[in-house]
Length: 361
Image (cartoon, rainbow, N blue to C red; front, side):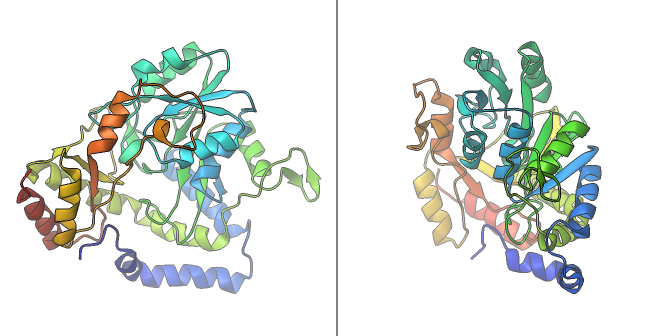
């Protein structure tokens, strides 16, 4: 079986470095808000191209804290896409705001910026663009809309660490960027973790307090805050993996290029010319998805769907629903994710391509 991800091989390739980092933390006896976290925040900010970074407990809380620190409160509305992982919505709700959905482009699954303005009301305070599958949204177009209506931008970079928009890394363009280090991500921890990047010093200081119960000094709390801290063990592991991220992303790009050049019978997604994606996922489209996935399983190749049900169709999405999300509905009914990760061997890639090309589509 070719798995969808291969954590064991990934760890074995970095075992010496990872083990050294883990033992460094254990030997220090310091597990929360210590030197490893501080060092990782500095290194990650430098990587993304921002002045500041705040490590938090998850990508979901990175979005929520970013919104909360920007002043989002109950009754506000936050615009985002109808095709994303549900945690994007969870985070907006956690901030107190109401998520407002916008349909997507069927070519790539990204938010259709031309449809944002029709959803803006007097309650709208922010936009959360989702850099889906590792490709950047059209940030210049989003910024034009945001500036026109005095809206803030919190980038959801959970799937796109290292991706570029017009030469800038995602997470450095909006008021802040929210990252997830869930194990499957391009930069994955060995547990939960996340980070917020920003160039705004006031926002940075507010986030430092808010992630730690609103504490500004010991036993002094200026805001309610929450408990959302990146622990030392995960920070140490991420410091190791950050050193390998560009190499790993380049491997993903080379695999993606082979897929785009050699796959037949399935449709690959459009890559926008304004940026450079990092292929957290490689998604294809087929109108015979059930048969395709069964065929791949029979040929011992694992596939998944990201995401089979758009947000507007979720039972938990209790706000206004209508029929304007036709692109998201159609897109979600056809997509399949095939394996793409740095540890894939060339012969495994050959097998995936030849197997897909033999499918009777």
